Length: 258
Ligand SMILES: [Zn+2]
Image 1 (cartoon, rainbow, N blue to C red):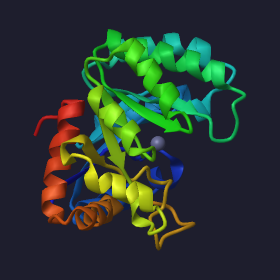
Image 2 (cartoon, rainbow, N blue to C red):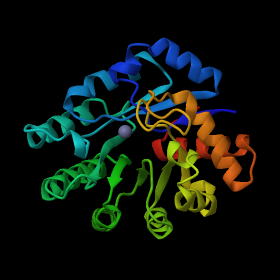
Image 3 (cartoon, helix red, strand yellow):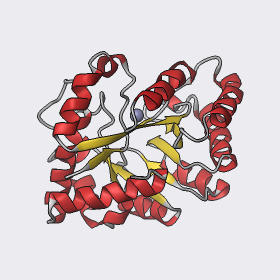
Image 4 (cartoon, protein in one colour):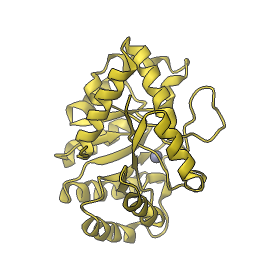
């Protein structure tokens, strides 16, 4: 079984500080490749460096809606420079998005920064990695307006089946992570058991989003293998088939060869 973790933050200190171990354990579990998204200017160099050091780590660059700061508007110009300079190595613009979970107060600013990054993705012909909480309909509105030829991934998707189908129609894949390991996530588990496997990619979002049984602990990319197993069980399929198809899907979105 070979798996790509389509979303993990290997540059975050808790993982970076034990990276050799993290990568070894992932390899033992069959998790062989990693997409590492940027969250704001402060981590772009680190993400790029990981991509240069390891042939199986693929960086993305973006400004995450929860990591906005006083410089974010100015950083958009820097992002464009980075994308130009590292065009061959960077596989996506992300993670970018809308997070209205806590409150609505940053809404207009989040929308502005998102839309400017969606346009950058279109200009550089890259897919996007989307972080969306409590804002799927608003996000879908933006995507319909911008129209991205390369689509992207809605990471840790937790919306409705109807919203999922609309993302798929627009050329997006949906990220399946640890949430489906919780029995109480009945609706989400049902949604992921129906949707076409060709539209799904596996992820952990490590070090965040621990799986059921590991609450309160650091999450690791090796657990993408457990996500594959649970997804396979929900769909009545073999884990190896889930791994293979989601691997293909991920490689297709991010244009990863090998
Ligand atoms: Zn993330």
